[in-house]
Image 1: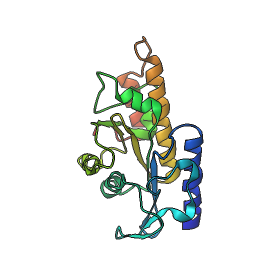
Image 2: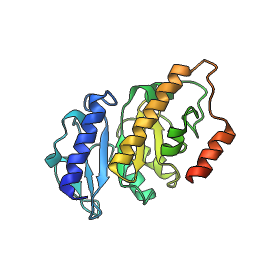
Image 3: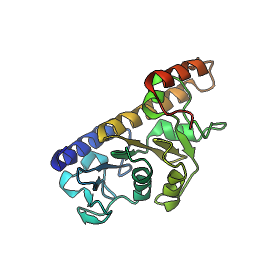
Length: 215
């Protein structure tokens, strides 16, 4: 995709997420790989509802900032996914309500944050790793992602928000929306006798769609 088109797409998708309340104020950040191996990144302190394509932070293939405004302080998170998952073409981080609320609940499976309520989170996200709370902008967040050795495309930062890597910006946005929708279902059904997918049903999905699941 031409860089001008990628810039426009990033801003359109970010605005859609913002307008539907999936992030708010100046929260959230988004990045995407350019054809020349560089990165486009949302600037620090900006709102997803008002991103300017011309002012996105631009990094070259060597990781040097070469244009646009200063990038988000969460760059260590983004870099960790690009460096450990070669298939990554985009990364999205949101501060979405239901996922954050779910991360505050007791007795969660840290290795598989989302309960198996529907097929779609399994298909789009695989297992979502729940990471502990870090101060915003802490380099330790990136280090925690690196420690996963590229085995997860999505993590949940406790009391903070999800981070999802995808092959392109559209797929990353689709996946993080599915994460929030599943977290919403989890909160709606918490404490009930809701029927979840069985281990056999999950394994059937993994087999049919050739998903990374056992790592």
